Amino acid sequence: MPADSDCTFCRIARGELEADIVVESESFLAFLDDRPVFPGHTLLIPREHYETLADLPASLGAEFLALAQTLSQVVPAAVDAEGTFVAINNKVSQSVPHLHLHVVPRRRKDGLRGFFWPRSGYRDDEQKLEIAAAIRKAFRALGSQPGPRPPIAGLPPLRSDSSSRNRCDRTSP
Image (cartoon, rainbow, N blue to C red; front, side, top):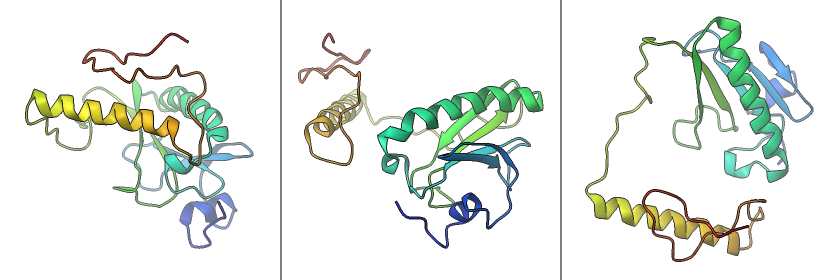
């Protein structure tokens, strides 16, 4: 995708805006968030402009995840934290419309309560089962429809009759 000339993160990737860069590769860049939840809060972005995780080419996914894993190890070590919260917002709550992954250092009793939003639950078990079935159906449709990415390599096909509540049923590879 072409760079967005007004996108803050594209401008950082091009060196037009300053950022405290902590690691970079040919395709990705990680830097400290200017408005951190806690000191050490780091953002990982692709250098090219992709708005959401779904827009990121599958060919870049492994490197993106590898950098995220590494950041989830080094950030808490650098700031003497006990762990991290790792998150991506897609469109809703996405302050900059450029894919970015948050790595937030965490400590016990740091004031954050689980996720940043209230939990709502399901109306009843029937609603929960309907939603699980709808997600399985959408997953199967993704692998059978033409689109920007092929089915996920190495993932065995889902059984079309899957209705398990405690596991994701897959056929043997």
